[in-house]
Amino acid sequence: MTINPRDYDLDELRKMARQPGEGLDEDRDPAEITVETDEDVLAGESFRSGLHRELLPFLDDDLEKPYLSSLPETYAAEFVVFEWLEFLLMHSGHRGAEGALAYYESVDWITEEVRDGLSEYLRGIDDAGAGDGTELDVDDHMLSLVYVAKLQSMA
Image: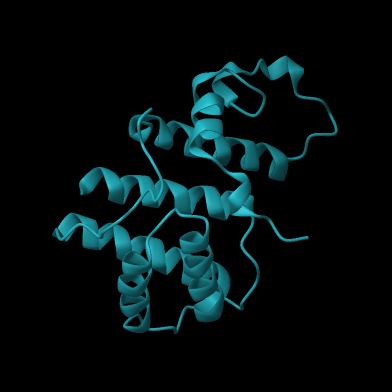
């Protein structure tokens, strides 16, 4: 089953990030963790919790889609772009990264101009460490949204 980033809305993420909830480690009593919870589940919850914390500073009530309408032209932004694209490559290969960028455009996270710019960067990155083309999961898409929010805040 494919994870659909279209299901994510900044309003929903804002709501989740502002409310204490399950999966946020700081709001969870260690005694509530059952024996059936394994280390992978705990690591996943911790990772999601970290993503929520990273998104908090970027949450703006009047933010509209597309979230990223142009790529900022600073060295710091370029570093974030390469970090994001390397992440996509490592997890899904060139084809998967291009597919993710196209999909993020289709759900209005980024504009066509941004996708084209990111695709150009992507073509210039060595694929020696590229992934095997596996599909991205929920955490991968949430991390991509964090990168989008970081870049938007640098614009």
